[in-house]
Each structure stands twice: as structure tokens, then as C-alpha cells.
Amino acid sequence: MKIMIDGNQVNYELEGPASAPVVMLSHALATNMSIWDPQIEVLARDFRVLRYDTLGHGASDAPPGPYTLDQLANQAAGLLDSLKIARVHFVGLSMGGMIAQTLALAKPQLVASMVLCNASSRIPPEAQALWQERIRIAESEGMEPWIEPAVARWFTAPFRAAHPEVIERVRGMIRKTSASGCAACCHAIAALDLTDRLQAIQAPALVIVGEEDQGTPVAMSRTIHERIKGSEMVVLPSASHLANVEQPQAFNRTVTTFLSHVVIGAKG
Image 1 (tube, rainbow, N blue to C red):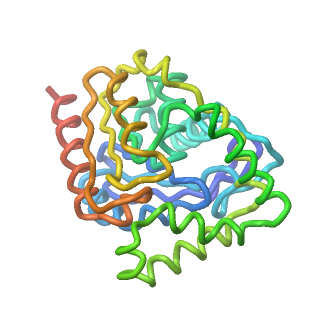
Image 2 (image 1 turned 30 degrees about the vertical axis):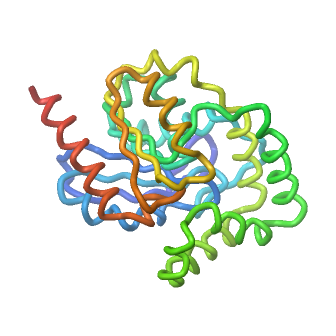
Image 3 (image 1 turned 45 degrees about the horizontal axis):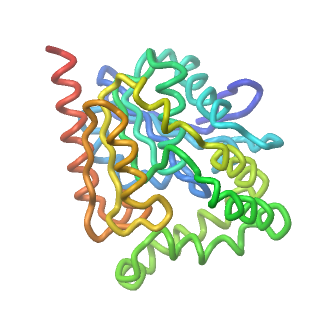
């Protein structure tokens, strides 16, 4: 389904019991909302599940960039407003986790809890050149040169060897991503600098990271965990950056356990 948010068409899906608490899923850079396919059946049993394509991705519009994380968080907030959803449990993967932090700081009333998966709270100065190179490649050469380096970072070698069909689907997802939209989101990510503000987040939080994540290593998740008071942290073995795809059963179990506790706690 599509809906107009701030002049842009946003693609989304809403599944699960209509009266259940809403879980909102925000995907990683150069993917789309189908990256959450391994979670939908499990989550939609007990929750109303809202997933969407971030600007520049999937079937959502890709307006001219660069984008900012505030802009991407406003997209999420605008979608909630249009759908008359007052409060969500926000689950963000990589870029989606950055959007989650931004939204929780800017509009805390919208975030009942959050799960930050394989995310960072700051892009260090030494990584700026890497992000500028990714922007240059996307803008000048398109998404094809992104594919193999991304796949190598996102999955462990054993998983790549054992699940070629999954890897091929992910390759197709990257290939179909708007190059200009991806570059525009890279600008937003490169400006990420929220670490020193995280102590202001009051929402219950779960931090999940793949033990072998190269892009957002365990240390980055530990930094987030240490700064969000009362947060939980889980490291998933035998998983890299797209831990929800590589270890779906462990990921789903971890997320549903957290969400169930949060919902029960909210009911008192």
C-alpha cells in the first residue's frame, strides 16, 4: 500500500491483529521492507506489524537528496500520524536503528519501546572517507559495485556458502535500490552523532548485534547499551550485519521475549 507523506509516496504494509500493540519495522540501507520477511509470521501472531520502505528505497519515492536522519525520522512519524497510530514499539535494523534513536529523541511520545539491531550511534571521523566513497560510487556507477562488498559485510562466509538463494535475493534487493536514494541516505548516516544524547532516552530498549558484524561491531552496540539506562543487550553468535536474516530463530525469540515483557509491564 502507498500513502502520501510530506509530498512523497511511502510504501508500507500493515499486518496482524487490528487491536494489538503496533510494532514498526525500519530496514537497513540498500534493502527494503522485505528484509523483515523472516520476522513477519512470528510478530504478526501477537502484534500489529507496520513495515515500510524508507525514502529512496523499495517502492517509496526517492526525492532529491541529501537526506538527514531527522527527515527520515519525520517520514516514520508522518506515516504513524497518517495511519492514526499514536505509539509503537520501534524495531530498527542498521539505518533503521539510527532512525529509531533519532525518533525516540525527537518525538519520545511515539516510542513505547525500541529494538536497535546492528546499529551505531555515531559515525567516527575516520569513517567519513568511506561513506563519501560509497556516495561517490552510488552516484557515478550505480548500485552494481555495491553488491559484493555489501554481501561480504552483511553475512558470514558459512552462511553465504550454505544459503545461496538468500544471498541472491539480497543481491537483487541491492541492485533494485535507487542509487540516488541510497546516496541521499548515506549523507544522513555519515552525519550520525547521537552518542552523547542517548542518556535522554527513557523508552525501554533492547540492543541486538551479530557477533561477527563488521559494519557495526559489537563495541558500537555496547556503547549504545551503556548510554541508554536500563537497556538490554544480546549478542547473536554466528551472525554478521543482517542478523535478523542470518539467525532468524534466535533473533525472533530475542525480540518477541523483549516485546512481551514490555507490553506486560505497560499493562501493569
